[in-house]
Structure formats: structure tokens, C-alpha cells
Image 1 (cartoon, rainbow, N blue to C red):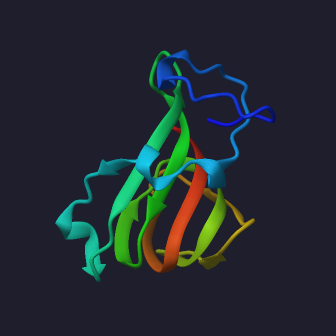
Image 2 (cartoon, rainbow, N blue to C red):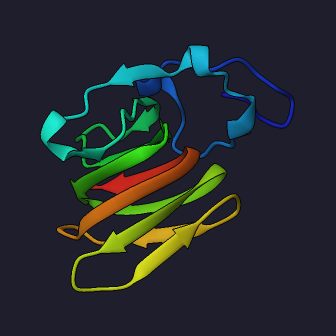
Length: 131
């Protein structure tokens, strides 16, 4: 994690509830591979990586960085607020709208939303999820 003075990252449980991260400065090498259920893949060979930066003691809130390479995947969402820092994607919400997201886009997804993500360019986001 980088703060304005570029302090080193703390392990997820020790990170404070209030913090700043310069997400583009977190190299791919610091992201961990995440399983993507093959049933979620519609097309392509997307690879998902991420890093949890903070988790509440009860596990009901999580903040971190998430990245996916190009492809098309489906998902069922949790309550999430995220900001895209790199890449582009189209997110189709079943029974709802189509969201075009890119660098600087802030997006809210609701728990239970069924989505289809078409990732045009490797997408990196900073997120906050509530369970």
C-alpha cells in the first residue's frame, strides 16, 4: 500500500480502517491469483488477481485491489463500490442497465445483481465490498 509518503504495505489484518492507496503503484507481482469458476467464463481466457488491503474483524467488509484480463465472465454480485483505475469493460446487469466503465469510473453494484462483464482491456479496480 502506498500513502502520500509511499509507506510500505501492511498485512491485511493490521491495516487501519482509514488509509490511502495509490493503486497504479501496486505491481502485478503483489497481486495474488484468484480462482475463477470455469462455469463463469463465457469467452476468452480471463485471469483474475487481487489483493485484500483490509478486512473488518467480522469479515463483513473487505477493501482491496482486483484485476481481470480480457474476456467475458458472469458473476453474482455483493454490495460493492469500486473505482476503475485502469482498463475498460462493459458490465451488463440482468434486468437493468449496461455500464461502460474505464479509468475514473465509480460504480455501485447491488447484492444479488447478475452481471456479465466484457473486459476489453485488463481492468484494475479498487473496491469496498459489504456482505
